[in-house]
Picture 1 (cartoon, helix red, strand yellow):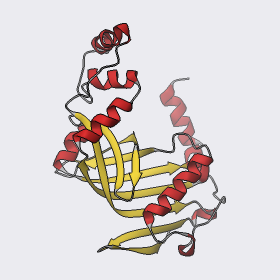
Picture 2: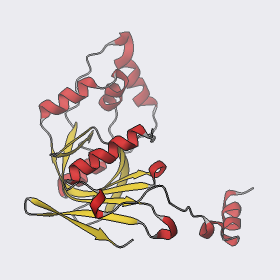
Picture 3: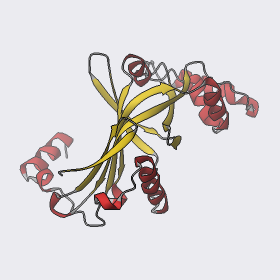
Picture 4: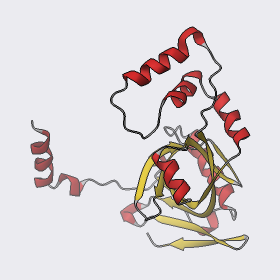
Amino acid sequence: MDVRLYFCTLMEKDILQQMRANYAMDSLNRDDVNANPFTQFELWFEQAIKAEVNEPNAFILATSTSEGKPSARVVLMKGFDHQGLVFYTNYASRKGKELSDNAYVAVVFNWLDLQRQVRLEGKVQKISEAESIQYFNSRPFESQVSAAVSPQSQEIENKKDLQEKAKQLMIGGRHDVAKPKDWGGYIIQINYFEFWQGRPNRLHDRVAYKKDGDEWKVVILAP
């Protein structure tokens, strides 16, 4: 069947409008959460790991240009503590260029297996070159090669040239690939947390932390 016709058939039958899930695994109240949002995030992240959520460190990162035009993609969290959240990328990629123009970002972790979502907001800054080198050197050799040969986000004719460059770097099993100059880490200095727990009949639980000077104010949000 033609894909377009199949999609139209779905719409005619209102299948998309009827697609929904009812959430009832857990609840979330102000008294349930830790006073410190970083500690609360660590608790939920540990629970996601124990529940064997697929890639629990994957999150959606939303950036925007200086004019406010947004873009989003999935990246991986590679560090988290009370200083912030760390991820790595190519500084010359689209997100890298947007972050140089506008350092404010939004983040979404979506743990469907636990019927949970976490939203974060904050401002990024680059981590030190030494930290980026240390992490790069800890990556699998094949990942180092990919980072070295790929001009991330740039238009290319095809992948053959990249594959050939990667092949040349991997010949002989060399493991001395240097970190590219335009590759490294960012830390998100978080100023907003929101924890979402799915509940029956769309009356979901939402607990947010808002930065108030050096303190965090905990509030309940309507679903």
